[in-house]
Image (cartoon, rainbow, N blue to C red; front, side, top):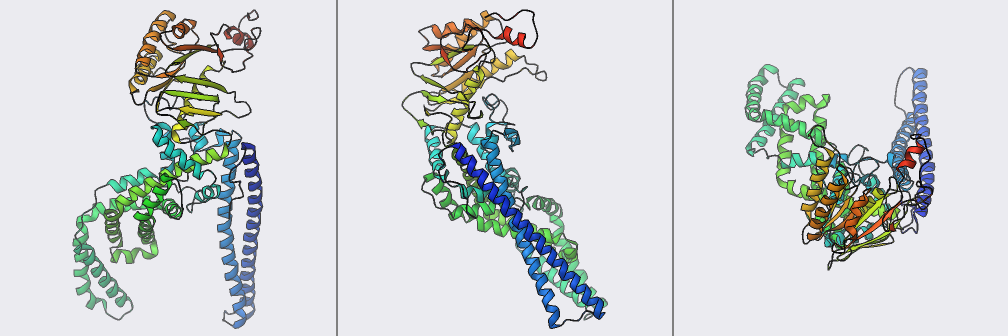
Length: 610
């Protein structure tokens, strides 16, 4: 089924309408499929009832040409039921794909999964401050991957800014994948069950474990002795050979098997548990690699992935491993328990899996990495597709620069997202943003940082245009105290500032975004510390923003030696301190909203002063 979504939408509202229309069509198809299932079940029940009537009338079950008619009808109805059930499953997945798309476009972030919290890193310099991971996060908005491996790679895209060349390569791949809505739907349909995710950690642990060395003579001898035991046992059960005559042959064979398998007993049991855990890990990966191997791309990054996978033949090798895993699952069923015991099937399967791992482990590592890379790029392309009004950034390499026109926060609904412009370069190095509570300073700093993260990930940004150089993002807005570590908020923030200062290099200066700079100390100490911190950052080539309530900090930006500027966010109406427009204005804020907020909450006796 081809996707009915437009290749290149002109606006997010067009995408939303297309998703809604496609969802309505899919739901109708799903309802028809459910009716076909019901009809097939009803026909099967009718066949059973007819057979029961014939049995009651004749008193016996004898095959006649007439009896073939209900049997054929039953077989056909069963086939139709299985086809309708498979079609319903795929249609349900397509519906879920459209529903998640509508949730993203409508800003229903609480409904979006996964959150990416399992990929969080300790002491990261912006993941918590910019809301990169977690509920209602940038990751939740972007993550449309089918596998855990793809989600992990997407998280690394967001947490590890790269140089402009790498970012441009990602962007070129995203541009080519942007109109491939049908391909993204096919990715969503991978796997037999929705819980199959291809956990990369499980695969890596298995691939990186030492291979069990087994002399080739051991599995061959086990196979021959096992076949002999099974053949003699079957002959005895068929009474072709008497048990007393067979025992002199069976006992030595059983002892031989035991002697050969005993040295491997513990390792075989451990590896069988691992193979059980892997049973559901390969389906999504193998189907995804097969899908990717059949694609043709122009972007060098995508074409390279396809060429690599075709050379590795990773999907074919995984198919062979899947057969071993299915055989292991069948071996554990009661019907095959005794024959598998005679044949030492569990030991043989472990040996075969170890041989596969020795031969194909490296290629599986590369195939897993290639699929994860493709899925991450495809997820970003989906984001670009759903936000056609956002612009792809332009990267520069000859100077330090962050320039954005009409920049907004991508997690805010477009209807309520207020946009501002910014330019930081070798001359205008930093800005101090003053303003009262709730004026929008923190959101403005986060908008700058989040869009920088999107740019380096290869995604479009919420801006009319953006140009930026290679920058290492460092933010401080959500640092808190720690009772367990015995750290005050001031100490924790000071450590964060030191880390931000240390991460910059000549090739990649820091883009610093410091919200409420050192708010845990007095105004005099804060002013002295801010002066020293800004000097150190500028000496390292950094650019960025500081926000503050303390107007003493604004004096730093007024010093012509630093190349800073003052700007503010405040109410547009001095008579109403809470009438915020969230527009960045030049100069220093002179309007306070603290008393107005307390008055609105019923704290205080008099009206707020203008």
